[in-house]
Amino acid sequence: MYIAEERFALWADFIERTFLEKEFKELIAKGIINGATSNPAIFKNAILTSPAYKEQLSTLSHLSPKEKYEAVAMYDIQCAADILRALYDAGDDGYVSIEVDPYLCDDAEATIAEGIRLHQSINRSNVMIKVPATSAGYVAMEALASAGIPVNATLIFSVDQALSCAEAFNRASQKSSVDTVISVFVSRVDRAIDETLRDSGVQTGKMGILNAADIYNRVEALNISKCRVLFASTGVKGDEFRASYYIDELLAPNSVNTAPIGTIDAYVSGGDRSIKLPIDSKVIEKHRQKVTNAGIRMESIIQQQIEEGLDAFKVAFSEILKALE
Image (cartoon, rainbow, N blue to C red; front, top):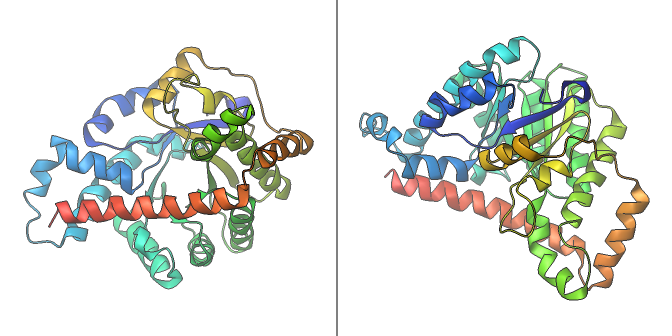
């Protein structure tokens, strides 16, 4: 844990082979990170731009594009899991996440089958299977967690999504004791509305944090065994906010923040270590009303972000497969 007394953890939202060989180990050795996350966009950038994958890919010409992708991705996940294993064995997280094929997001049975296959093929107990928070995803999350597979519920923007994940994990906890996280996306919400808020004189960079804080309050109140909120999409675009802003402002007991390496570096070098959450529901509602008065319908914004998030992962996945043909 980065702040052990508060059970606050930092995970690296980045996977790339040369990074794993050096900087990843250094961050762990310094006690800065104790886990890692990946997604199709992260693997797309790594596989298609890093020369570290050329040698392995040259031996995989007989495989289909998806088989090639899985071969290189699972190798990286295995390496990360092995590096993190000592932390996992000590009960200090030590997890790395890999996402199921995003095109399966509306097929519960296929998601369950792929989640089990990936976990068995990687063959590391400290691997979390990432499942998007869709109607089919809730079914898959419960099934995977019930089977003893750690699950990272991802692409969460709304309270309803988060509570559906929490309910799935609560039911699963009656059958199996396994770690789960509910990944709430933060900065994308602000980027979608801040221009309008700025024109209306309403504070920017706030609604994404308060939306995440609301979700945190609701999930924590349920007190689900071994289930935590994870704040994702916490990198800053542009220079309006300090680089560590979305870590500083979401520092919460019993939580995880997964962030790009530059954001983590900025937090370590000059971030705020004071606890910021929970935030009173009245404060959240007061700002939400200001956003509404500015002409923004948050329900529509949230739904748009859910759809765009799924589409972005599908596009990244398609581009990987196309490049590997």
